[in-house]
Image (cartoon, rainbow, N blue to C red; front, side, top):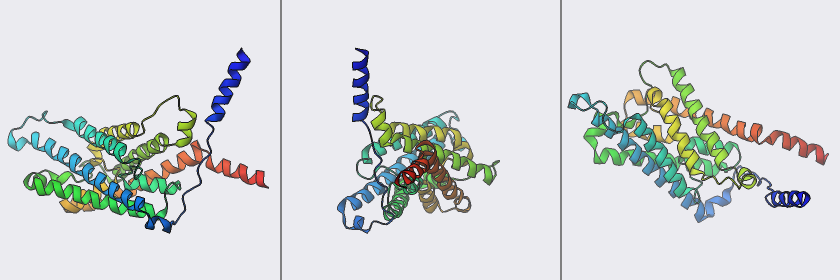
Length: 285
């Protein structure tokens, strides 16, 4: 009886055996001829637009509800916890809605990390980043169009380094925060893990949204939390103040470094891609 159970378990495991798909082509010109590619670009544009519209409105609404000049209750509004929930919740919703169409990146740093891991081609990565930045600009533009007075008065939701923190601290916060996010993206969407651990159902958008939520709790007091270059760029373009532009490099360099480290860690440490490649080379020899 014990032997029968062992055989059955081995059979089940073998049925779930998984081989990694081949890496995406570095430059895949054929993508430009497919409607699915442009549909994905539209999905990334609209998702980033909605993300910025809801989250920036939440930030401005909180500042309005706690404005001392209006004798408002300083403990009123949604608070930092509510802002973090808005960012994390929107990512959960939008990744859930667009994952099957574009992969649900909604963030140039995520796209960059997946490109380094050869999950997407260079053409797709660049076009995704352009669509995300344009969507962010349009999303913040809608906020300003609907609530211009509040937008100008309460900072436009732009990311800026908070007083008392130097640029090194801000850069470190963005690197680590983006590492947490992109590492979670890799882990939650790893098809080999899903095949191996299918008895543990994982809804990928949920851990990704929670990662965004947790990082916001930690870094809102430092940088306002970027971890998404499109989010920071869109707000800076529409707000267009010197401070937002002076600190803008932090919100590009930090997330891209964090994404690169996360891609390397997942692919070459956790997935041991380098060791597998070396083993395959020795076998062929």
